[in-house]
Image (cartoon, rainbow, N blue to C red):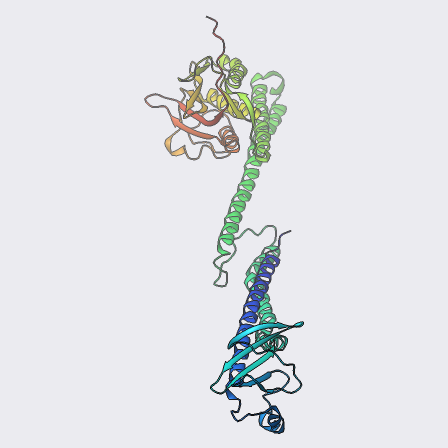
Length: 453
């Protein structure tokens, strides 16, 4: 599992260590270069500061106190007179051959020397120093320049740990706030001035989620209450009718009582079926669907409702709106069961509210390379002030005729939402009736059946 704390600390500390290493290398290299320049300057200073009254090496030996601190083990001093004779060299040091004037590095035996030759008016002075001694001194000086960086590194790491912990503290507080909440607490999280700007989008998204969960929970409670009310009403009426019929003896010889009981039982059965369908659609996850023929689903739906339409003397049929033709199979990506339930609910709803002798058509459509269908009837339509609410569960307008529970259009809307379709309602222009349009089916391919003529 990825940890933001470990990720931040890892990159910050590793980056700091890499930057410190590069800085240390640069400081060390610069310090060594400057130390070497300083030692070259020291050689030149020694050469220029030597006394001029030197005649023989023996004289120098007798005046050793005058050269104390100059001619030590770190520096070799050699002096030649005008005739080229060596008149002095440091005690206990090897003798180097005379080199031309200037400064250079030479190799002698297994060691290297840094040699400075200086031509004066009456003599030639040569000052030399072992490179190993220079390197040791330069290394010592360079290491002394790194101790502030060595102290700064652990201090910076501790500071990084504190800053990261402080920076991530609001996330920990948010996690604790959510963890201590009860299951029924869906109030939005409070945002105070201590919440960083970077976390505010997360808090806003959580509050939006909590708000939607609260709305869904409220809708679920309302749904259960409405369903209980819808079931209780016909059951109570059925019980009263049975009691009345049992008391006055009409249960045996009054056919109207049996008819009322049968009607209420059918209403209960239909309501239970719709509740089960709605619950199944609510629990069904969204999926990509399979290739199905929208035309075949329409033909099957029209066939299933043909007897009910014939009983109510309603003209029910399947039509095609250009550019869709009768030869098009209208293959789409969809859930075939869901589309069938959606179309069946729309046809059933249209037949119920269309008067006898009316007409209900299922029309296959094509708009912007997306297939769909319209269910058109010539019933009373829906008042404009009810258009926004007819898709709510258990909602029935004040002027709605016939029996029903207000779930048919709600089920259709839920199926359309789950499959990414668009469901819209509109009253027919210039005529009575309602048109329910379902669009947005992804077209797979266009197949043309063989013509019979």
